[in-house]
Image 1 (cartoon, rainbow, N blue to C red):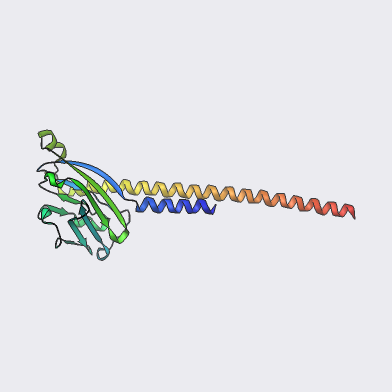
Image 2: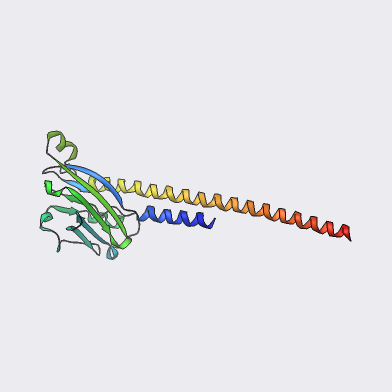
Length: 205
C-alpha cells in the first residue's frame, strides 16, 4: 500500500512539473503567439519570474517580479515581441512575435522559475502564401481574442491535471479498502485459530 501511495504521489508531481511541448506553424512576415501557461493558481506579481529563450541561448523576453524587462533582450527581437500583462496573475505568460523571418524558426523555451515549470514551443516558419496568411498569420486578431484562446488552451492542462489527481485518489482508496479487508480476514483467521487451540486445551484438561 505504501509503495502504491508513493508511486501515485511521484506520478502526480511529474505530471505537474514535466516540460510540456507543442509545435506551431507560421509564415514569413506574419505573427504568431507562443503559448506558455502555468498550472499553478494565485500568482503574486512580485513572485513572478519568467524567461523566454530561443534555441537555448538567445534572450527573447524576460518577466522579472511581474514586470516586463527588455534590458538583456537580444537585438533580433527588439520591438517585435509583446506579452499579455493582464494575464500574468492567471498564469498566462505567452508572447507574440511580429514580422517573422526564417531565423525565428526553432525551439523556444519558457522557464517559469518561481514554480519550477518549463514549456517548449517548436516554431516552424513557412513561405508566405495567400492561404497561409489566412490560416497562420494572426496579425489581424484582437489582443483580447488571443489572450482568451491561450487561456482556453491552459484550461485543458488544468483538466488533465485534475483527472490525474482524481484517478490517483481513487487508486489509493481502492488499495486501502483491499488492505483493510485483507487485514480483517487475517484477524478473523487468527481469532478462529486461537479459539480452536483454547478448546483443544480445555478438552485435554
